[in-house]
Image 1 (cartoon, rainbow, N blue to C red):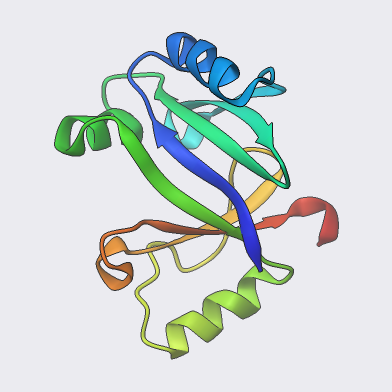
Image 2 (image 1 turned 180 degrees about the vertical axis):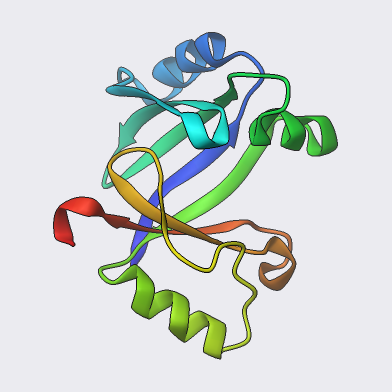
Length: 134
């Protein structure tokens, strides 16, 4: 398991892309809308990990709701796993609360599942598995 990406919730995705391109001295390599979550994503590579910028596509998106409650900033930390269903079962057996019972399609050609932040000291944890390895 390793850190695949850090998700950052932002109000203005275009401005955030420009900011992080300067910070990381690299270009955004991928944009993708996740319709089910009403989120527009932008990815920047940094070493073996990525930064995923998340902007809402409508007022009722999960990201806009998050920003209204907590403000802009780190939204989640994503760990890449080789078998997401196995990891979900293992973590559930360890007593962690899953926010979804089955993996769902996320951005960047990944299956994703989330752990409730209360069990991780306030951090939303995402498990992700490349759909190329199914």
